[in-house]
Length: 559
Image 1 (tube, rainbow, N blue to C red):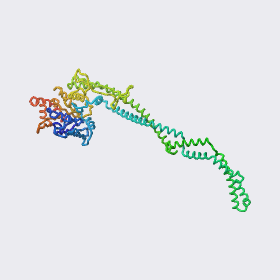
Image 2 (cartoon, one colour; image 1 turned 90 degrees about the vertical axis):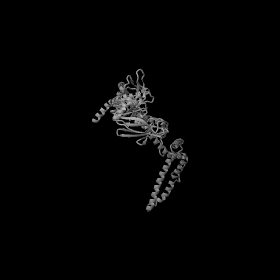
Image 3 (spheres, rainbow, N blue to C red; image 1 turned 90 degrees about the horizontal axis):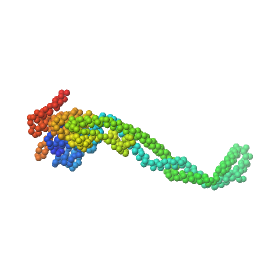
Image 4 (cartoon, rainbow, N blue to C red; image 1 turned 180 degrees about the vertical axis):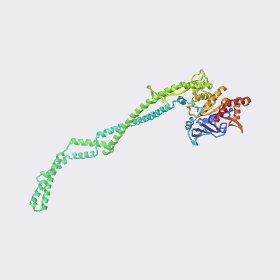
């Protein structure tokens, strides 16, 4: 609900503050008194663009401030316009962007007349009207949940696919490295062992000669160490029985003889194994070359190469997990696409079922509002889209959280005229009455609690004006309605009444507003009936027009 409107330095208004009430608020006044400026001011509060000449002549700054109430929330909106063309917007004294203002007020106020803010002129709202009327909003919430889940999964799948595509070359390298390291079969210390074996093979001839000489010296030569030891032991053996110490020496010499024999045997065995082997030398050199290549490519040592091998195995296992997630996402996306397509079709069928009844209800209501012969049609369209998410019967359609139906209202206000898009053919007054008709039909479903009608009396007769007034009163039972009118029959139907007038002061025109009640309101209705010269007849007729409203207000106060 729009509770208060403050306007400073806007066109002919120097400073004006008006208060609006629940129910039906009427605004009347002579031509040029500033009624349209109030509507322009409300339009600015809704995010409308400010004309360059809207600031009062001689002033640098204009201010429009409005207090909007929605449930428990109070929204204080202030728009500051400067002569240079710049403007600033504040919500509860905090600066906000124009887009944020439009999002907020679009759900709170609907402005109907020759203004771009009216929801009927925004094609994307037509589907909302139809769904509200058909009671399909709960079904649409289910579809929206599926859609958002589908878009989330699709994005994850797309992102993961892009990552995989970018990493394909790297993964191929990792796979090649993993295969190379696993095929190499490296182990810690292998290079050191092979290096020792290589040195041994390289010196096999020399080592074999030393071992042969050692074997000869240990036992085989006539003057071998074993023979010398035996020659030294025998003389000492004669004295072994004379002294324990001598006996110990002899025993140790016996042990040395046995040890020399073992040593000689080991030397011979080792000598039999050590011999030049060119084939084995080639194998060792080739293996050492392989290991050197591995070390050079993977960090300089076999230990770093083994660490790389462990990392590659982990990385490739993660790739397997990524591939598994990719397959899961593909399966999940397929299931969600099937569910989304089915829900889109089901919702579309329900809309089609409600379409004809809504068309007829609106046509009947418009006829009641003095637009007989008006044809109203709701047209459906399904747009093909290569990257769409809605797949039906082999075709891909553009879809969103509301489904895949593209809905637009078409109208022919006059018999014989072809149906055209509503926003392109209706004049300001017709738009207001058409919107009144639609809002009347959809009153129980419309979430917007403040409706503003400008020029609603354009091109209608007095008898129809009473019908329009009754329709406005019907709307005002459940929401706030603000209406600018020139017709007394409509003005008299209001619960509250503001009158705009103007005066010339100091050579400048000033617009003013005042609340009219009681006799003052009767005079204002009489002025609308007869013009500047108010007659007794117009006063009597004004009393007649106001009587039903007075009776209703009295009943409301008693109730």
